[in-house]
Length: 148
Image (cartoon, rainbow, N blue to C red; front, side, top):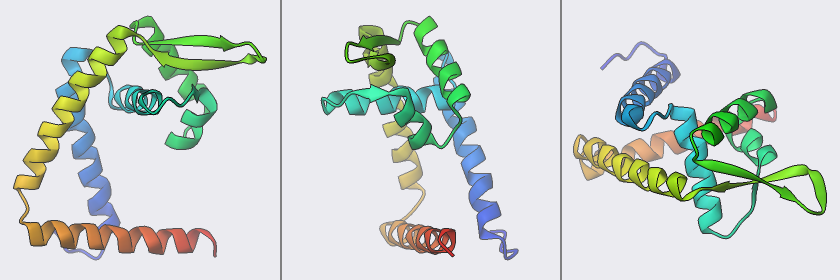
């Protein structure tokens, strides 16, 4: 364990490793990490019978409109999502998954479940509880600092 007084650096490093693992797991599906995450967001919102629009993705993923547009265009070209016009507002386009998009997302979910199980096996129940406790403390502190 590298206890150099920079826990967030370690968290960022862990996040980078996690994203590389996900990229590798999704490579045969032709999805990057962000494409997979956005596809998942649309999947879960649609499964809850909620409509999804680009603006939500910008807010949920905290990225620029142009970045979201780029990812959506790629997902459209792959045949995973469609944009449907909204009769009440010609500027708005609802995002929906195609049948292929649903099938791909279900494969993604299966693979993520296996990765989570692998990670969970590395920790005891006590270590997992401690992990979540530490993460929540850090999250709380950062949220408090955001408003200072």
